[in-house]
Length: 173
Image 1 (tube, rainbow, N blue to C red):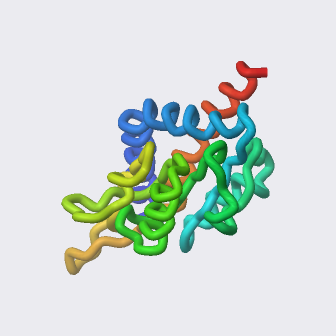
Image 2: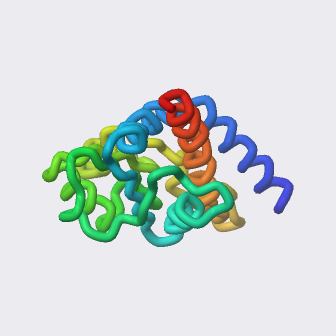
């Protein structure tokens, strides 16, 4: 089972690199506006995706100019936000995205895109990075799926975004 999961995970990372690489750079550019300007990058992770926020804020290589988002009312136009959630239709993340949109605060999202959703983060976010995960990766004997590494996919996208962001900050110095 582990070998099959590893194969699936390797394929997922390859798809993310191929399909999301340019968007990772776009997301980094958006966040860099705060990092090289007079703003702050705020991060909000929901559920297990709080792990990405922990990595960005308290990891061995924290994201420059980043703080945990506490209150949307404290933000101004120079700030940027990174939202990380399991699916593009997660209600708390949608609510936050709408508040940011209403306040005209640019933001990027990392989440799995739910196809044919009527209301989702892909239509609200300035840049959306798709984890390519909305269900488990492995089939069981009953036709159900399990093995849902959403945090691993989100961390992969986060690191790609951060590598680009760090380069942009260095180039601006």
